[in-house]
Length: 278
Picture 1 (cartoon, rainbow, N blue to C red):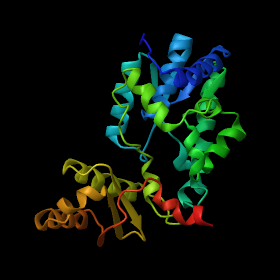
Picture 2 (tube, rainbow, N blue to C red):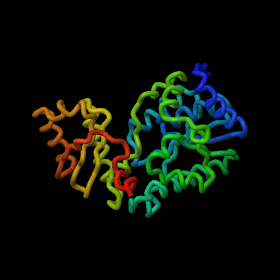
Picture 3 (cartoon, rainbow, N blue to C red):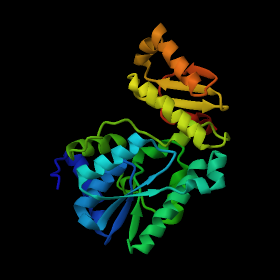
């Protein structure tokens, strides 16, 4: 089991987290392989051992790389990992892709985890939201609260920066990986979610990543327009004649009629800008 080494400020919050998890007999962690759920899973495993289980729900809203990352991180932690197929595509309101899309997705997914917990006599399901998430539009958090799924990192006030430090000191290889929200977040609200659209976006982002652009987002507007977000310091290389031509050729080959570059650069959650401004 990993030996922890924390600063005094962080150890207080982490001790609270450990104490909170020690109050339950068993728990399942909604696990994505991202740094937040990884630190939560590592802490739960340290406290509960084999009574903690990480659960990854796969599907068309995630990439193969993300699933492979989740499996690798679970192995680093030593925690048991279960992989199930997510059932959110059976929820019409998720596919409709309104501004409450995340609420319906999380409600469906958390309900799936709760059914597993009940069938296996697991006391609690937890998820990896952190204290900084309140700054963004997160309707999925409402679904968690309604269903009784707890967010222990929020409860003890751990921020993203603190969680990354915990992950680094805990020896997790994903401690500095950029956030990777589900592919559905790339599709503009009210444009229905389809498997074809998700796969097109995933293929475009994979192509750009292989070419060295990271972080990167391909935002889909009106089915035909791809709005690319990359780091500002990578824009000169992106606009090189050969690079620009290759990107345009590849994305039009994938089915995007128009390919644009967002001059604001990479911004996590940029589809929520208009919502947060209201």
